[in-house]
Length: 317
Image (cartoon, rainbow, N blue to C red; front, side):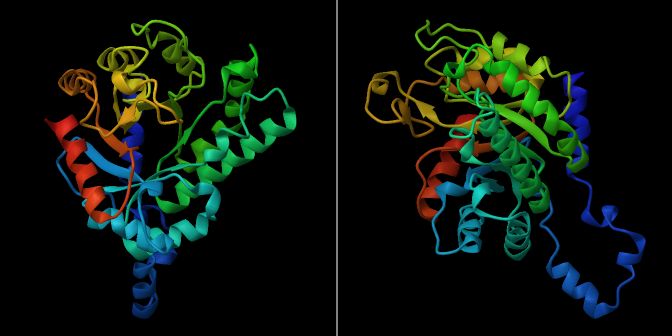
């Protein structure tokens, strides 16, 4: 069932823009048609690869939105995962995508940590819902097909999963109208795993939560590095299976697990302890096809090229 849904939505994503335009809009005079073409969103990358590689927008450098998007393309990325949705309007990002020809496949609003869907405060949850709706509109305007969200935090209380579910269900109709998946990232928020538990934990609780929505518009944006300290990455991939719609990728080092700062334990993709051969095998078993977003230290075009090479080494072998 889930695999069929993902296949259906992938088909929606490749529909040409012209197929969605009114007939009257296609019968434009030459000058108007040329202007419209200049403002068209970029098409999906043409490749026979099962994986499409992107970086977070926050990893790029440049003086303008357009320059930063262009840097990702110059590095060889297939597209960009836009992690600054709060900084733009839907129209601003649409124009930037059209001007640069860079495909933006996803949107993220990092206010999800502060204004949480799990908050016991109703006003805070309402703001979190508004943020999610904004991200959905931003992704849709730029040609993307999903939004990554962090559900919240377990320490918001025992009702936190239910509060988040109720909030997200209220947004699903908008997501469905605009063809946007709502994808949960596995993060260190205490939800669906034991922070002080063993390193052999299962992804079952996370999978069950996704299934509780009984909706094709909800899935996982699975970060391959985030739970390497709590369970076997390849096992989590198999357990989540076709619930995984998109991937984040970073490295993780047990030897650096006690370092200071929010990035403790995280390293470049091909550094650390993750067994990438086993991850590749698991992704083949679940027949994963789609976007992979790097989430490591960024920099100039040369740095982004190194990141892309590491992504390919890890997942293509």
